[in-house]
Amino acid sequence: MKELLVSLVELIEDYLNLGQLESEIAASIIIFTLALVIGWIVYFAFRRYLSRWAERTQTKIDDEILRNI
Image (tube, rainbow, N blue to C red):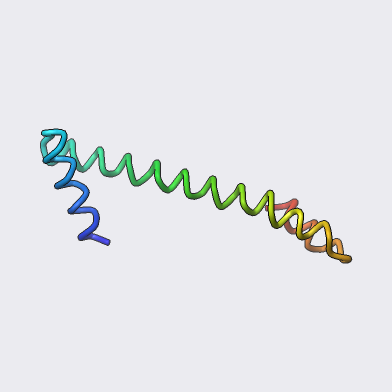
């Protein structure tokens, strides 16, 4: 993981001609934004697909679990 971060920082330094500190900040922002997007996609998948699946089951406990997530 550390090697990936170092590679990303070096890539930003090379292409945007930024210093090391600015490149590290930019890499952090990119990683944070990527984590938000992935989190939103997972949340969307849970709400959409698992809710449909839970509605088709006979028990209501799974509906309550998904409603409280």
